[in-house]
Length: 123
Image 1 (cartoon, rainbow, N blue to C red):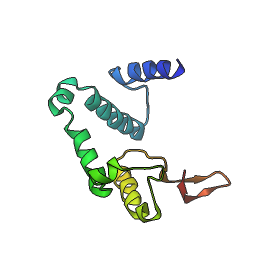
Image 2: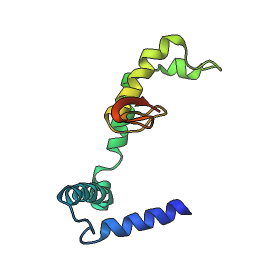
Image 3: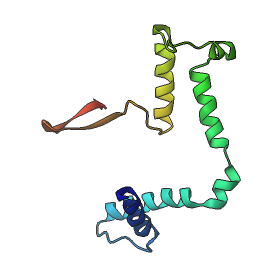
Image 4: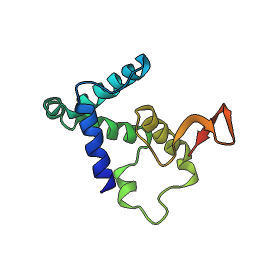
């Protein structure tokens, strides 16, 4: 419910003609967010493109982590082994490079204990 309400507020805000923002950098940031939002809401373009972007992502995953159909059909309780580490790393890297979140989020951010310096973080 709260997520639905947040979506409604965000939708109304992004559909508005102008942002209630007074600095140039905020206006520029708002314009970029609104442009991205508008691209997602462009139903004509979404229908034209179809499922091809999803197919491209799946093909990228298969390329990074190939599994033969015979191996897939004979899977047992041990699906991943030590030899799969580098391929799994490649899949996670591929997903991060195209902007899809994974179970591990790699980012640079502020350290709560040392907010003056920036540190690499892995969540």
